[in-house]
Image 1 (cartoon, rainbow, N blue to C red):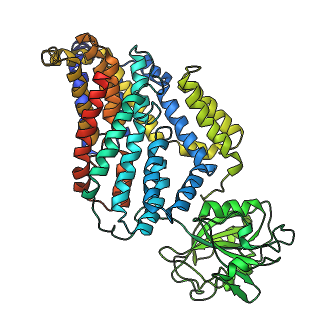
Image 2 (image 1 turned 60 degrees about the vertical axis):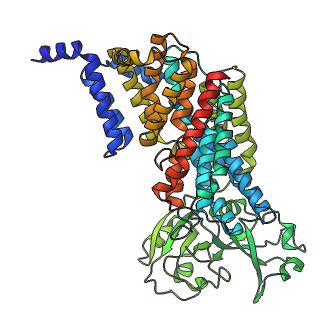
Image 3 (image 1 turned 90 degrees about the horizontal axis):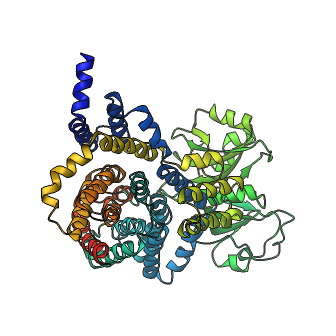
Amino acid sequence: MIDILRAFVETNQAIISLVILGIIFIGFALERYPATVVAILGACAYLALGILDAEGMYSVFSNSAPIVIGAMFVLSGALIRTGVMNRVGELIMARADKHPRLAIAEVLLGALVASAFLNNTPVVVILMPIMFKLAETTGISPKKLLMPLSIAAVLGGTLTLIGTSTNLVVDGIAREQGLQRFGIFEITPYGLVTAASGMVTMALLWWLLPSDKPVGGPAGSDAVDYLTELVILPDEERIGEPPTAFKLFNRSTRLVGIRRGNTVVRGPELESWTLAAGDRMVVRTDGATLMTLHESGRFGIGIGSGVPDEDDVVVEAMVSPIHPSIGQRLADIPFLQKLRARIIGIDRPGHQAGPDLANVRIRGADRLLVVGGPAQIDGLRDNPHILGVDVSRTRAFRRNKAWIAILSLVGVVTLAALNIVSIGVAAVLAIGVILVTRCIDGEEAWATIDGSVLLLIFAMLAVGLALERSGAVSLMVYWAGPVLTSAPPWALVFIVYFFALILSELLSNNAVAALLTPVTIAMAEQLGVDPRPLIIALMIGASACFATPVGYQTNTIVYAAGDYRFSDFVKIGVPLNIVTGIATCLAISFL
């Protein structure tokens, strides 16, 4: 019986492979299981039936595409960890007061350029709170800004080979199929056409974007705004100078007052105030900046009786709604005296706590940043009225390492562009540099990598190899031959582009790219045309998806954050898809 089954599979490998491929497509479309799980099960089916042998399965792990993608995740993480992206945001917000509409254009242009070299998902996540602030400054609905942000990031990804993981997946599979590797800027001329046509079309269609406010405020932005106090130490060199002497105040770090004994100074008086040892500057700032100030040792930070120790850790905790100290001052909360811990910041979701750290009246759900040794933190965890005690995931910026992270990214682009080494080698070398120089710690680096993306790529590489070895690819080209034989090369570019685009609006971009790359190359060889223009069309078509919230990951992020309707994406995305598609295909065909 087993021999009969084996013989049947060997005789009908191509048909069986296509059936499995169809089941994979259905699995992607139904979304009952994650795309990664569906792809792995598909690869396992080919392996179990003998269509793909163990040697073939092992060979997919030698593909450099997942390595490069993982490296770009880490490089993006290093730029965030060293405060580069935060600094860019601060510079943009500094211009927003005088030229808010120009600042909006700068954010969109920044997203476009940054996404050409960085993973565009963290780019959008970082710039989204800035868009909410710009919306508040200009009175424009956030819904008119968030979708353009995602569109700009997606368009930016089409500018270079490393702009999206989809490009790298296609390049990796194409090289395995015998094509020469793509240069980092080889697709740039066509990507510029895509980006230019997309940005112009988006500007013309801007009036179609909804103008109502998102329900529940800036969904998804969730910017944490801590209130803290910075104590001027006796050896501070700025004593006798005004607070502005410290070059740390900007849109994300704001001085709201100074407390000296029982005297509190606010507003215009701050400009003429001269600092003395023991003065407490009342500041609002984000978590990463607060951690940076804490680790700098330049100020005493927060309130409490704890003495700094090398074993201290910073934890986040939440005040229970039934805490007996609710309504009392934060300085009077019992565990400060009992545990000898320090509170270095408080955040009140949806409100601004105040007037200063010591005199904040405690409310349920207040979030605290607490510093203490292991014994103090254990005591805090045992307190039934303090919830969710956990080591803070917020990390201090390593701004002194920012130049290393920037040069590492520039090095990857330069080495790959000049063909000195492959992009895979350049990316691995860059990761070595940023890890050795501690731009980012090892644990943080691995945490930046989206493992599901890498597993999906490996699984789809295996599926593509099985389709090729079974003859399924040749069979598909044979079936499509009568239709495609008479088509001119420019028509083939249009067919590949829009077929990839339509599938990618519904399925995973990387999965579509991995499935269609071997088919496209085989089709080009059968028809006697150059496969390279078709592969470029596939790269851009599988990435430039605007018509659905699931067409690209950044679309999904702003869909939730902006409280959009599905139809909002359709109204803007369909015209964008058509215009950018036609412009790109004409550029690929005739440039």
